[in-house]
Length: 252
Image (cartoon, rainbow, N blue to C red; front, side, top):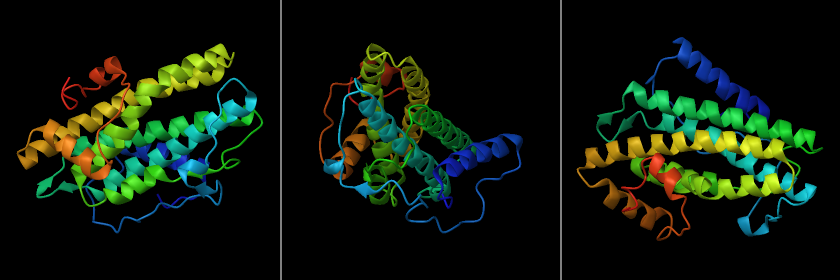
């Protein structure tokens, strides 16, 4: 989280995961002051979401814009996964088990892999991360839920990341129609990994609901109403959400 350079951050996340698997890291450790904002590169310029341009993937400029936006999401996702492990070593009075770190270190590893794949593809198209403006909505969601383990899980993996499951298949199809099978292949890898990330979110959100002695569905609805501004809007990718275990949270 203290690494500003985007590629170096992604590589650091992957090295952290390798060290964790090798048993050279311990968790939980000494409580640390988690930064309120992670270090970031000087570019891209961060603007309000309404000031970011949306282009279809039918043109080269549109594909670059799409891949740049996705790379920005993945860079945020590295910090979000690392922040979750660093910030929430306990849920209230309940210490979180090592399996919690197992899950979210793996998520950080995957997000680092995704960023590096997208960054390399941008380079193949003559672009680079930082060339276009981006928005800060994902980290704003982290800031508003920094005090509440259940809320963080509800809003980040179970709202924002789950939304990616809804839209990615159509994006893959659009890239394939445009003849960009290389970019489509990267998004297909991301899609499969993200189902596992949402599943991890469901698993630990349900544990948080158990700690609070409340039905997971009711807790999820309360978190969405308070921190996301209302009811979730479809269309939903029902098969992918069901594979990730979200059907019960959505009442389906």
